[in-house]
Every structure is written in structure tokens, then in C-alpha cells.
Image (tube, rainbow, N blue to C red; front, side):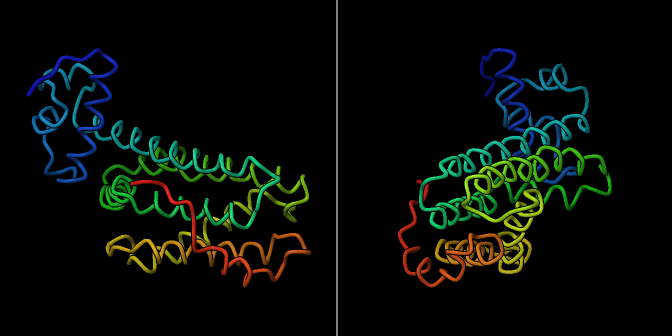
Amino acid sequence: MVTTRGGGDRRQAILEGAFTVFARRGYAQACVKEVAAEAGVAKPTVYNHLNDKATLFRHAIQAAAQTVLDERLAVLDLLKDADGDLPATLHDVGYRLLRLHTDDRACALRRLLYSEITHFPDILDVVTESGPHRLIQALADRLARLALAGRLRITDPDLAAEQFLALLTGPLEVRTRMGTRPIDDTALNDLALAAVESFLQIFGPRATTGAGADMRKAAEPVDRPQE
């Protein structure tokens, strides 16, 4: 069904519809007619906004990567308060990042990247610039501020940010077999807890190093985002 939208709304609907179709079909099997139907626009409208299927694919990937990044950056706002319970906050941040890493959009984005990178090698740069690099930069900024406030012992914020994210996603990729197996909420919570314990062993203030057991006891009631 074709719906009436403004130009910006139509373009957004096309990009979202295209990502849905590419994720479902893969690039080779997807067709512009199906994208138009998914977006609720006429097929010529798709070509008016994006010239061909390859351009549509690149822009759909870029838009999805930006959405994924924006969601993660919003989670990092929890670290703005340097006066709260830092282990609990890091645990909450880690858990929320893991939830986002395993949601449908993020998993579909990774699958498309893995499957189509030989045909579209440039999309790796697109996804990286709209994802990991900017996330690391934003997290490094938050961690540097915490270090200045005396909450962490960090000399290289970029490295600390990379380590924190690696402690989260490394075990996750193993547990989920590179995203091919589901993982339950309890397991995500435990992965976040283990990551934060390890992170604080390295970067935590000396006064709190070794407090992992106390943190584990207090970690069960995480304020989890609503579905």
C-alpha cells in the first residue's frame, strides 16, 4: 500500500524498508519492488531518492549503522554522573550495550556486513565510522572524565574504552557462536558483571580493587530497559 509522506519521511521509510528487505533476503535476492512495498511507496519513488539498488544498499547500511550508534551513545549518558555508584553504573551500561548488541537490527547489520563485504568492501569503512570508532571515542571521553574525578586509574582512555568493549563483546560472540545462537537475559547480565569486574581490576581506583565479590552480590537487580 502506497502512503503519503513528506520528502524526508519518504526517504527514511525507503531506507528502513530497504534494510528490512536486505536483511531478510540478502543483497542478491532483494528487489526494489519489494523495498517499495515494504516502505509503502511507489517503485519510481525509490529511484527518485536513490538511483540504483547498489546505492540503496549502501545508504540503507549507513542509516542502520547510525541508528545502532545513536542507541549506544544514549546508553553512555549514564556515565555522566561521576558521583554515583560507579561499579553498578558500569554494570548497567555494560548490560544495556550487550542488549543492543544482540537486538535484531544490530545482528542483521553484522550479518549483512559479513555476507556482502566482498561485493561492497567500502561498507566496512561506512559501518566502522558510524559505529565502533565513534563509540570508542565517546566512551573514552566518559572514562577520561571519570579518571579526572579520581574514580578510575587511566592513562590511555582510548585503550581503556577498547578494553571495556572487548570484555563485553568478546565472550558474547563466543557464547552466541557469532550471533547465530540466542542468549538469555541472565547470561547477558552475568557477562556484563564479569566484564566490569575485570575492567575494575585493571582500571579501578586502588581502594576498590578486589571488590568484585561485593559487586556480584549487589548486581542482581539491574534496572533493565523495557522491551
